[in-house]
Length: 233
Image 1 (cartoon, rainbow, N blue to C red):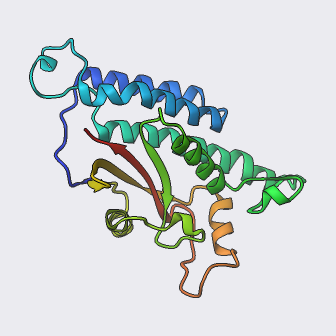
Image 2: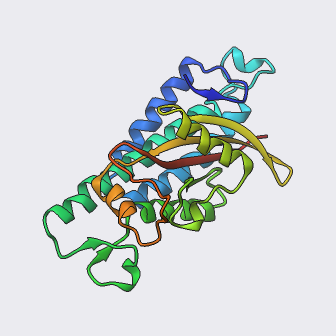
């Protein structure tokens, strides 16, 4: 059961086909996180017009009802790619280097260190910043948390706060809603951000900035939310 505040837009067979093709394409490119991020942006710039203007060839598209991939389907697709990339990085790069005792480690201050690479959350945020800088991307994404170690991950709107509480109170469910910011309407999806690799919960549990009330995380715990925001016409 998934929380939905907005009316669902009916999907069609063509929508499902396009979504599957989109997902396969992204999975083929996940060997490089940054390449995937750019791919998301490119696909978004091509896809969003389809989302809202229709394909123009089907019987349904001849009516007043828009056709194409719904904002929710699009958000679900890009989220799947994002999480696949981050899980691979956290599990097969960061955690594996630590287990091997490699001289290269993931470090919060990697820019000022030698033999250091970014933490999974930092890798994810840098990708989000690149998409945010791309005017052709057509969507934004970010990490949010009720327990942020970095202020950049604090909820920015009332809807984001509502979404974080919802996914925390309802394990296994996503949050979908709409909000208006600066006079423009947006579709917002927030997905549970789980501790998928030992490097994730170990970093949070041992971080010097955590307060006394900060939760102790373990594998698969919801540590926050992954937000996808898509402008609507």
